[in-house]
Length: 161
Image (cartoon, rainbow, N blue to C red; front, side):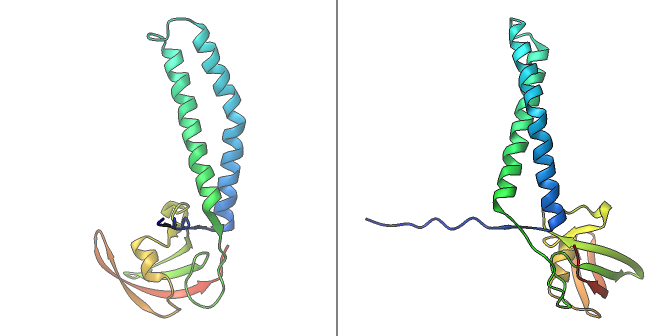
């Protein structure tokens, strides 16, 4: 008999703030689900389902809600909260001030599922995030981005979230 081992699922890194947002969203969706089920029940009671737009919309809403809940469950189950170790090197949770083409910007390096550049958070998996990970203050890194090669200098690193 041949034994095969299934590799353990990869853990998904999150900052504490990002993980807490997942839990809040899950709680909100769970509270919305009974109403969605009730709408679907009422739509079914209306009769002919083939031409019932209310039924189709209700079914779609419940399906979307359930799919999002399953996705959140997966993220929560495999997620792990990581905190910046304050070692002086960029890692998840670090707040990094960089100079890119003469322009200074400050970003928080976060896990891939919680990044939002408009909120000044970048993923550790993004081109810039990958280039910054493990680097220290004063280092200059070359970053390959879709718009071309960029030269970025790390001005300051603070422990983060």
